[in-house]
Image (cartoon, rainbow, N blue to C red; front, top):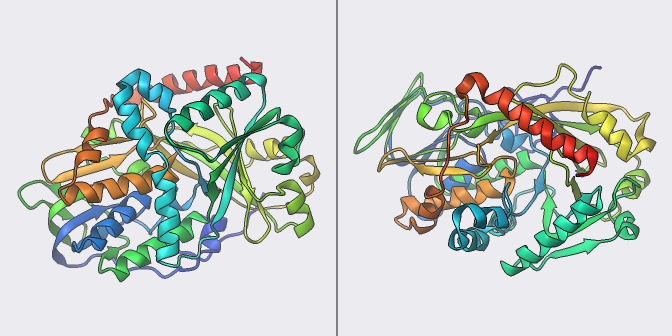
Length: 432
């Protein structure tokens, strides 16, 4: 099967790259610079930190190995999902109620940051409110009800349970037993969001260099980050490479695993058809361990994602898993053409909780959002900026959470994780 290609250099051939508002290529770093903060990585985390610091008056340089939004920030499903990859009950049982309360207080902030920056900087990224979590079984509905009660204890009032009879208000399919809506969720064109945020950072004085991979980091009172053709000396370095971070820093690289997910976009559908499939124009995510997610696009395509590849490995046929699932949900699309198909890696931690901390007094890092990155990266990027500015209270809460290396090291981390995923996938299929 052949797919359309984009004219956006060094980006994956995604619908996002093809429809990006800004396709200009920034120059590579070819000089030696002095600045206040050097950020490695121009995805959501790095750009969020750049905006926070630039708004505070810091001089910021961002180094990106490829293009702004090249990694998961510009390839994901485009869904604003509040919270973290592990629920607040799990966080409380692992780390104590005090940590759960602290993280709960921050759990809606990522979405708020996105909406605020879209408004403040007039970013055109097709922001649409509303998300629907779809349940296949009565067990998943009970879990959502418990989830809703716990969220409401932390101030989230935008949740509402949906009965089987009401599902058709949000998605026209007979697959689901019910679900839950989140009025504080939503969806966006993620590449246009991150490129728009990058332009906002530049408007505040930040400098962003593409094609500028960090090849060395020399720690010290004023650390130096070196690229192939230049260097940046700064008071602080923020490492925000996530799943696409090279093994430059093994002390953090070994504590995350790249995991791929596949996404595809149909040809433009008749407006009446796409409206009948998703009447409320909410994005949808199901409740399975290996989940599907989908939404409408601004040009009336259905964007459908799912599948998983531990270690960042992709199937030979990118649509082999997700197209059959799309047809289970919407059999009326059996003759619809798939125009774009792509994959992207996100960074998974063993705990499924983001990994944040210090490599030294001057070098901070954040990665491992474990599949909930659109909102969490915006929050943690802001918190990185706060820490540099001397307000590290929230940073220290995240940095205090234990993070462990994957058992088996590089050799066995993938097969062991696959075994665990097989077990949970089996439970989904059996309705356990």
